[in-house]
Image (cartoon, rainbow over all chains, first blue to last red; front, top):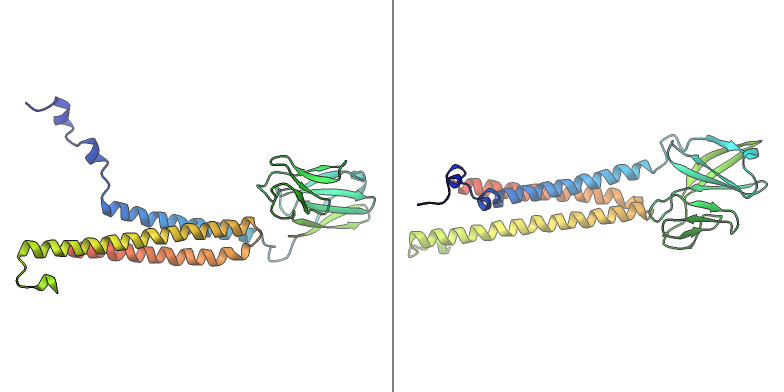
Length: 161
Length: 88
């Protein structure tokens, strides 16, 4: 007699059910190629977003001189909401601003007024007050934000990589 | 050509034809796999360009990836069309 009754009700074996034909495999290779192409296109769109907009960088009021003590810092958004930047007041009338995203893996950098350096706590990356890499894994300097002072107002005017 | 040799019997000729067909299929599959590996390499170069500040590399890699995809589609199309023709 043959095997159990369920084998007659479900005659397709597990192996046959999961058998992949060469034709299906070939089509899946085409899908993988399509996915790689789409991913490259998405990267292209991302890279385009990092370029200045057609009308140039916007001019945005980011804060007041009186609002930040000498040696202090504050965080603002530029050029769009969510693009975090950090402004440093190095001397009474000397300012510097940088993107707050570490050039290693994008963690936010923090200002350390004592040693006067920017610090990335994720992987111990350090930048000087000009945004240059002092130590750690960051591969390049922080993108610098152009700052213009008008009276008591501080304006962000662009990004320089 | 060997498969037109009148001394070859029918089954032998059929086996020879199938062997040649398999060689062609495997060559096309190897080509498609090579193209996909090349596309992954392009993807790595593009990611490296974006993270390393060399965004100028992204457009050429995207174009090359598109061409590679077109080539893979063409290869797969010829393979499937050839097999459909062989089945008639």
